[in-house]
Length: 311
Ligand SMILES: Nc1nc2c(ncn2[C@@H]2O[C@H](COP(=O)(O)OP(=O)(O)OP(=O)(O)O)[C@@H](O)[C@H]2O)c(=O)[nH]1
Ligand SMILES: [Mg+2]
Image (tube, rainbow, N blue to C red; front, side, top):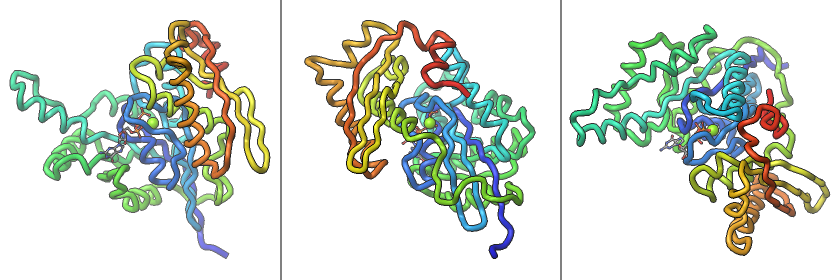
């Protein structure tokens, strides 16, 4: 018989591009949650299960916190609220590099207002639930130690955190220490999922996300933000899975951009998406992609919901 078992939910909250999805992937040792250099990559609450013999922590990766402007972004912020509500402990992720870069720019431009090291708005928005909050200072690989200490001290003055941990989600520094802090903040309880499970989203969800990730990497400006993926068919077979998907865009003029000259762009998207899906599944797939226009889909609540963005 094993000794006492602990389990709980940990929500990963923060601004867009702070490294939330990268952190979740590092914690799980799998590229489950899509992560790119562009802000607002994540649109859902993505769950990932971390298991040890006596511990199970269910991580909830979330979209970056913003002031929503259209229906899709409102749905994204509902996922943030939901994760916050479900969490036993909150990981508040702050990007050290962002303020560091800002500081370097300010040196050259002396008339700028002094840089506020603390994101007070973020603190206000995430403190509402009275849950233990661990401040996670991410991207420590990209800043000086002095800067790290300065930011940490400023946050310590602004709020009493349950714990503070500097990490690099990308370079994997500080991860065991972070896990130890988490363990101290979850309660006795049974495993909530099988220990060998990584997530409970269906396969077709991950497939749509992996294609969307390639959209973010292949197309510029508004396009990735205007598009979503709809899986029309997913046929599993022992040797090869067959997947048919639509790239849904917001306006007719975007269709041609997705397709590209003589279909070159969509072909490239297909090749890269297939490679990403195959490497995740460890299996061959056949992928057929088409483009579909749904006028202003991201501005309308019902189309946003119908395209899979519902809690
Ligand atoms: N240098 C450095 N870069 C990092 C680190 N963690 C994440 N990044 C980079 O930051 C960018 C954003 O990472 P994501 O994990 O997608 O960030 P996110 O918070 O999930 O972003 P959204 O989903 O848009 O809210 C990517 O280019 C990552 O490689 C880190 O520890 N150090
Ligand atoms: Mg993300």
